Image (tube, rainbow, N blue to C red; front, top):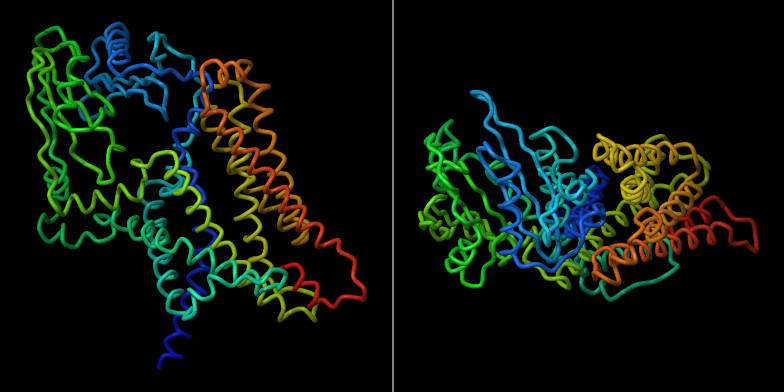
Length: 524
């Protein structure tokens, strides 16, 4: 019975990993990059300087700017700068037609002077974050697909644990230059090393979308009025409609300290002003999402927008919502400091490597069965091409995304869309290239090009942003410096990988090799 169970789990582990492996690779790699989405966005908007300015000073400047440029708006939104996102962002919304939502206008300000910055339009790190769970698909199809992939990832993890009865012993075993055995040892080692992370990140993703994938309990209580559920879980702040009587808006800066007093040790994330300049104006101060592990979905303090009187403080979360917030906080990692964020990033890359090695192992075993014929059937050739495009091709697409940010004109009206288009064009070309070239040549050429593009990012940054050294040395913009150095390190690693693969392919043999021996060398 035990042998039968393990064999069944092995079959389940293999095929769930193969069918969704290429999609999971993209989800995990972009999710890993999303842990540094603020830093990526800052690099992709070099016009935004890094300044050490208090929130109070920034808020005074933001209010002054909005009072000059957003008169008549129905709502103001102010995003305060922090160490990860140094820009002071302001956004406002004008009333729309009946039944329609008004248009939004967003600007980025210098947090030290309040001057409007002509920052280039870009998706920045937000692109990787959104792609991670929406897959650049219309709502809600991308979320459904990514959630299905997460469900099967959990199945693959559990079945893998059952299948490998000596999994912890195998963790301490690595036999280099042993072909399939080396890939399997690496797969086991990476899988066990960060197994708690794999389980946490996969299960928490399902909890986040629980209301979408498991709505039975909500429908049983609320019926078709599901909005009532969300209104109860996330109670609205005091947002009274406009009275139509003008009244001066209170100074926002003193409200920050009053809000902080409601959150011992907490900090402010953003401020929303409803009906500015009206007698029914209100100010909602929202707590920063990175204050603690458990995400507080309420976390709002409301004030009267004319008198500054405290109106409402969000009540403490229920136990159920706190558990949900804990999973959300663990998954997002917003609470993490720099070192822990790097650990999240490395664990995400380890998960990506685990999936990639699994795909290589599956293909390598079946290539050996066709060694004598010298030709692969269509289905194995398809897997071979998809492996190349989903691994080296995806990295190449990421590099193209960064290069497009610097090469597209800053004044180009649709530049953010074309940054994303560059990502998918490069990815699509990598798939075509893999289909036209031999396996080893495709790997080497794509890895080499990705290595060249990533390793050249520091030079690209210096040539396209004239004050790059001034930013590093005078203003201490170490976020951009760290991004450049990380790209350089990634490029060097990819260059090493391309060299190893190329050198093994060119290694002379003492005797003529059989097709089987060649394939064994290729998967090594």
